[in-house]
Length: 383
Ligand SMILES: [Zn+2]
Image 1 (cartoon, helix red, strand yellow):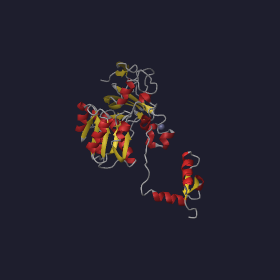
Image 2 (cartoon, rainbow, N blue to C red):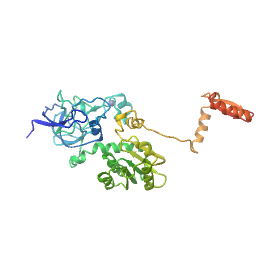
Image 3 (cartoon, rainbow, N blue to C red):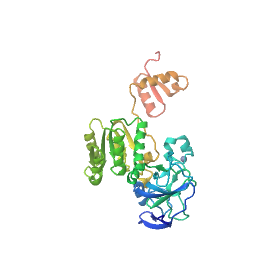
Image 4 (tube, rainbow, N blue to C red):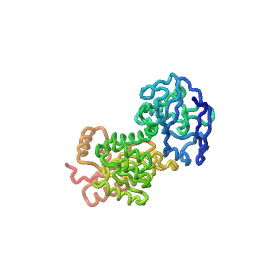
């Protein structure tokens, strides 16, 4: 019954066709396991890698696939529980994420909510039961091998017994969508009943429709293509309307179409799931003033990594804009001046000019020439 070999698909490099190779089934030590793959999704990241967009050298030949759902077919006695403390046994259904934070580096310790930016993450690429490729670490294979002794950051997540592995393989990309919306919640930028516009109708866009509705969105509108099968599926998932980029071929046309559907002042939240750098400037125009823009276009134009918009996504940052002030901000300024009146050389930033034609002209000219910091006109210096 137990197979002696495992078949693994490898790629020799970008543009290469997959080759299915056969490797000996590895021995499974104390804190390791062999997981038979039931389902593994094809992610946009896989496709970028195959197009040669990955910005760093990769150890070709490699096996792709990181949306893994499978069944433990063999495990060592020392591997007893998953990351959440649930018991693991032969026959347990499990999912594995692609990037596993170390929990020890400066980032993991001090910024745990951004542990996705771990300085020493464990990737699949680290599971190497054989000293030569193919390695059993990509999900486009019959099995993957995990070894917590060699790679202690490895995280295994048990799936419910009654969950199909097809459904379980969506857990990683769906979790990315949930996290993106939770980032908006943290920024107080997503509330129950909000109108959400999703840019992009690929797998992440479709899963975002489900995540937004489950997390309380009142209305969801998707901008993407093609109608069949993607936009139709977005509507089947509950999107109220879709705007096709095949029929609305300019940014202005898409913005107008979205704003017409959304009505009012624009959407409360716009989420970029498209991965196109141009989606950012376009999506901002679909937002109401005071709305929240979430950039999760994961691999946004990694071919030109100097694109600023791509960096906004990669750095897991919060970009906050601020325009002037509201009526409630003014007293904060007054209170700070009172509180900190002696702590800063406020008066040194001010250069005084008299109230006269010459004085006002000189004040404006001095400021324009940057010969002072704060030119200040003083009509009555006795006050
Ligand atoms: Zn770390």
